[in-house]
Image (cartoon, rainbow, N blue to C red; front, side):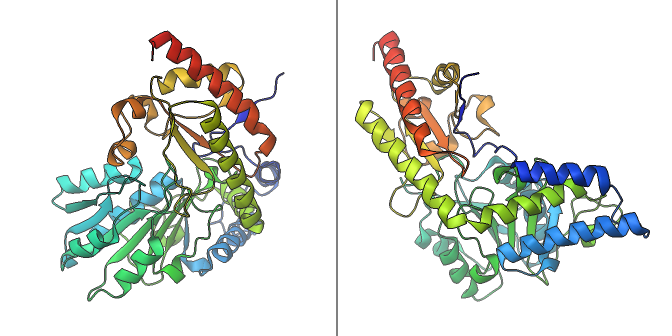
Length: 387
């Protein structure tokens, strides 16, 4: 079998072998219900508690502030809906941006129908919000600011620390939620230091299992739960705990943060090399990701006018190369990217945009085969369309 090159790690990642081994062992040996009072239940609860401590240590928060969910989407929904319904007596105004993930934007569409007022901060051409606009739209009715740390399509890094400082100095309490699904494990993420009240993380973005996520909730913050039931996770998220998933997530977090800086340096080298080589080989392409400290190390978005991204994907797939045209959660709908639209790209640039996303499992030697394949595919497609 020919070698495969997987540059679609922002969609999902391969489960780390150590994570898979530990999960398998947990499924076979540690199958008790953590709520049971007998030995098997106690062992399962201890496994969950150990993973919770690992994750809390990585985020530099208390284990009591870590809650397990089914993934990033549930964490975002629980954080946003949980806060606004618990504190709606304080106001009905929410601030977010126009480049958020669908699991955030669609929640706000729903909340608007319920009477909440949503302000969508615009982003500049680099995909980053304007802090002055945030300061201008804050008002006495504002109860929540919700922003992603790293954009999943272009890798733009939002100034969440600066936002936290602004909210700390505001005359009333405004809760701050950060979607860290694309940043955790690649960049430093310290919610308590940054003045963040709620933070979302997904397991399958960091070589952990699918179907498991993290929600950090600052101590003393009330949430109205999405799911009522047996009161697990201190009634924030009822339902029998996914012990193998939680254990696997803990292991994935441990691996991701242990060598995070070295991993980030490696991914950034891949990103920079791929961008520069493609620019050398392919005429008329546009880099949509930042290289000035405002871009994450693992995401590279490039536009190839005169092509169609879905056709390019299939060309590259024939060479064993796997990439994306944007967010895997919404790409199948066939709509132009709301992120690239917000960044003021031309329609032709959006139609031919590709996202390359890397992990610590990728190597620099994978870059040139990708460059060669992309160059060939773009030239062939442009020849066919006469562009």
